[in-house]
Length: 340
Ligand code: UDP
Ligand code: MG
Image: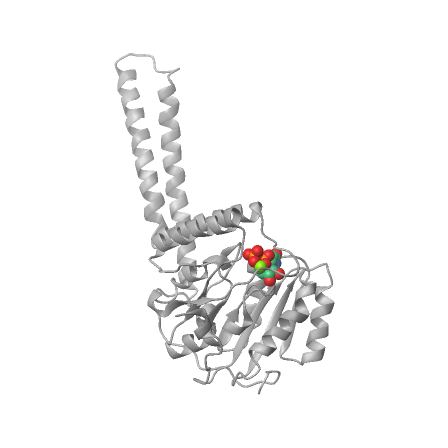
């Protein structure tokens, strides 16, 4: 499907309410153009929508610019001001928590994502009865070495770990069923790996990807450099670890504990036999190794017990299930929606 052919796809059914969630950090020059672009893109959108912009502790007048837009445009523009910079993932989670729609669309507030793509994503989500539709940036306009290469590696790794066939996990522009998205909690830099997390509460078959446009930044600057790329890599390892071992962490740590402990026990037994035969074993490095292995094995075992307890609490929350059940009914009607 070409990107052009998806623009302005008719979004006529089924009936829903749409919450658009956008994080903004020091984007003062983008506020007005972005809010305008969203209104233009959704000018003839046939369903109620709201625009939630989370000001992530900006210090450049983004707050005032957002409040002004809310005043000018009406209560469907809902700024949320965080008192300091909590970073993009936390800002997105704050917006998701505040979203009242049945469908949530997230995108960046710097116009690198194109609001014109919103209707086609929602259309695909609802017509194909999916839980997530991700944008796949065509002609991604970002630095090659620092941004594109790490994200290619991350995409490939996640594909291997999860079996999810996503080409571009890191694209912020995505559409979700609100009730499914609200079952996962995001932290760290995890907004990049939402499809991987969603796979813990719904089937990968209910997620899909469509091509979207991507533009270079025209105002403000990117908040991501080498240090954030490193954090993303660490979070990728965390996702990897969780998805691999969330099933039975006790088995993983228990296996390590038993293995290392067994080595330690064998070493100490061997030295014990030597001692019985009358040899001096006091100063041997092997003695230390034996002790360390036994202690290390015990450590792994206790970590395994703790991990089992934690994962039990995680699944006992009740809203995490390794299968998809059904969608909740639309929430009750309320004011402050944009209606055509
Ligand atoms: N952002 C945010 N908090 C942060 C960093 C970024 O809310 O700490 C927002 C930012 O204003 C933008 C989006 O997240 O709307 C993506 O950030 P950016 O454009 O810097 O990322 P890039 O496009 O370079 O990946
Ligand atoms: Mg950007």
